[in-house]
Image 1 (cartoon, rainbow, N blue to C red):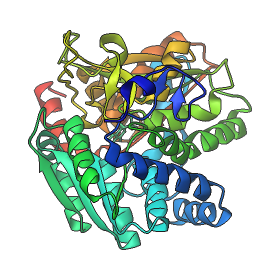
Image 2 (cartoon, rainbow, N blue to C red):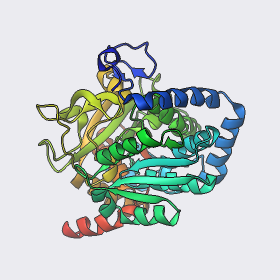
Image 3 (cartoon, rainbow, N blue to C red):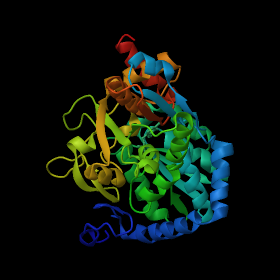
Image 4 (cartoon, rainbow, N blue to C red):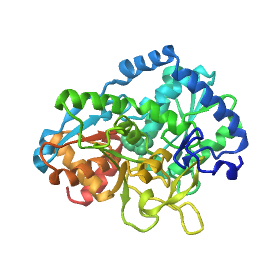
Length: 405
Ligand SMILES: Cc1ncc(COP(=O)(O)O)c(C=O)c1O
């Protein structure tokens, strides 16, 4: 392992640090690959040809800019703040994940890597990665926990149809954490030919920064669109937080606008007991997981805790390190919504607006439903609708029937 003592010295000046969080805690075999990735990304970022190709694909292939939609009937049904939805669910493949997959896919090709591996929880990042590999003619292997494969079966079929190999992971809780571990094991032995296309603002430096940059387009567009529509900034931006990629993308351009509240919504699952939720900030402590230092749900011996959420994409024991810093400084607020509230939010948005959100995104909608009625009517809430709910139809059919909806 790389020197944990050296790397754990808290310092904001070290690259890849967000306050005391972030860094790079990986086996020695990956250090050179991460150095290469950091170098190549810096060059690509400054290269107008790379940026032009990415912008072209984001526009003509993925469907950016996504609309900012005023949810009039939802707003009227709640009373209070005006609710806008940033429609990342309308992107090609059905979620924000394609922004980052396109960026890293182009980078992998530029680095001469012909093979791409990725982990996936809800399957949306796996689908986005398989899509980009088909587009760029690359070999693709996706690691996915067996529990997630069962609950997001449609996305497993989509990945296979797109030509990816989906490798089920039977270790641990058989969810996202275990899929990331397997992908990292693969990468240790294949690093010369393979790019690890990590799907959230997580992991060792430079991933949290790079993934955030590829999702920054969300808040760049959001800010411009809301000013065009309303002539002012929102009172709050709300996004669900799994690893944290859609949330950091939605927050980033507003960080300097101190009067705009930034609200991240974690998965409250089915209770407050450790193992029943994925609320890292309420139940977790700082620690190292999968390459980075951030808040981690763990037991008293430092063993990583089990997590639960009805949404596979929020069911993870840690959170991106930039969110950890935003939490500690108080610039962003982190709350939770439980499974039941998320399911209610799906039904409510479907019936008031004709929009079926992903279960992950429904956690953010649930928070808007909670706070909007207590806000003045001239306030604006923007909810980042990170994905669409088609992938969740099996779960929704089962859960909503149980509740008699
Ligand atoms: C639609 C959707 N939203 C949100 C997430 C959570 O990921 P992140 O926190 O990186 O945005 C996922 C993860 O799979 C997802 O599929």
